[in-house]
Image 1 (spheres, rainbow, N blue to C red):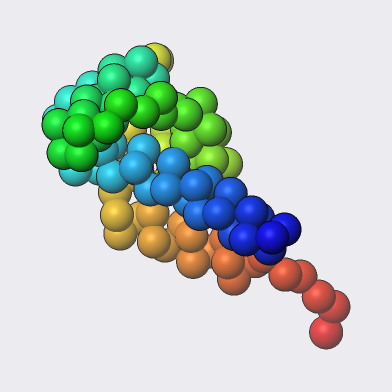
Image 2 (cartoon, rainbow, N blue to C red):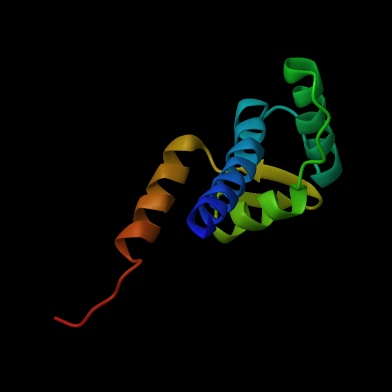
Length: 101
C-alpha cells in the first residue's frame, strides 16, 4: 500500500511538471503568467475530458524552476526550448552523483 501511494504521488508530481512545461513550450507565443497558465490548463481538462480540476500551478512552476526548465521575464514565464531543456537535464543527470577517483 505504501509503495502504491508513493508511486502514485510521484506520478502526480511528474504530471504537474509535464503539463506546465507542455503548455509553455507548445504555446510559446502566449505570454503566460502564473494565473493565466493555471487557467489554461484547467480549461484544457474541462474541454478535453469534461473534468474540473484545480491544477497545482505553484508545484509545477517550482519543479520546473528547480530543474532550470523555465525562466521569468517579469511576471511572464518562458520555457527553455526543448533542445536546450534536454541538454540541461542531461547536464544535471551527468552531475547528479559525484565521487572521487
